[in-house]
Amino acid sequence: MKKLSIILIVLAVALFAAGCKDSKTDKVTIGISKIVSHPALDSVEKGIQDQLKEEGYTNITFDLQNANGEISTAASIAQKFKADKVNIAVGIATPTAQALTNTIKDAVVIYSAVTDPVDAGLVKSFTAGEKNVAGVSDMTPVKDQIVFLKKLKDVKRLGHIYASHEANAVTLAKMAKNACQELGIEFVESTVTNSSEVKQAAQSIAGRVDAFYLSTDNTVISALAAVADVAKANKLPIMSADPSSAEKYEVFAAWGFDYYKMGKATGKLISRILKGEKAESIPTIFMTDPSDVDLLINLDVAKKLGITIPDDMVKKASRVVKDGKMTKK
Picture 1 (cartoon, rainbow, N blue to C red):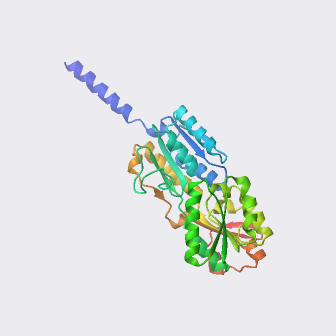
Picture 2 (cartoon, rainbow, N blue to C red):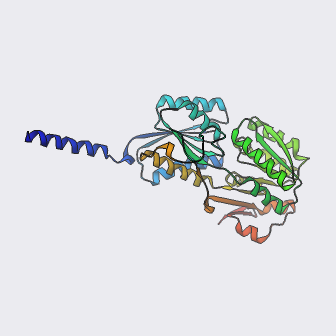
Picture 3 (cartoon, rainbow, N blue to C red):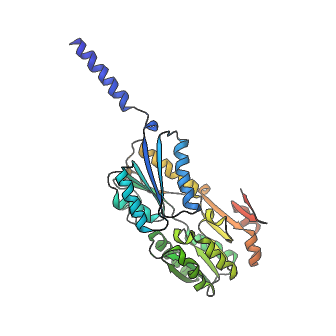
């Protein structure tokens, strides 16, 4: 009897030790699907990987997938992740997140860079996740961005290009239209179904507007070079909600989130799930810290357009382009 008791104690200790295995060394596969490659979404992807590495996870395999702007490809990626039995699937941007939640029911799905997860059907409420769904929103201050532009230029007609098939883009377009109505600005819109249509859409309204406003619409942002070309030819300023992508092109100003930090916030959320927290208990995470937001001002573009930017506004900017050089504060 005494021997039996000793054996049972040894077994109990062994089982306890097995159960307490450091989760950071467990083998984990994380599938990441982004709707398209552009600086902001690429930064989210990198932020996720860097955050998990910084937290000490040493045995994670990342399956990085790019849908190249195609909804059908996003669906195929979701099927791949399901077949591969990934531990966690991450959807960067609304269409890929929707594809994952529609397909994967037996693994946790994390959404990131999704403007309105409720409107997109990912969760029923901002205050809680679903059984296997949680994530990070990039809801952007649309009205404040337009007000900022109006302070620097007398805008009577504002042009906006957006993808009519993307829930994120449609939500932001409605917000921009409402903001313009409140501010007494005529809202001139043009819709696209893919990035190849963006230049023509910009050209179709360039002669009827005083400026362009671009949201975090992935279809349009991935073709930012085309909008910048049209804006330059027509001497129109671009106000963008994506500072990361604006660095490369002649964008007058950009005010929005630091998407690398959004990626790190997403990585922290994934870590919480890996440590055993339930997705359904986690509300939508919003980027609310002032340090999460970037303001880019391109003084070179302002000079070409004959727009004077007050020194106090320049001082508030976290990124300033002058004489062809980018300065980060």
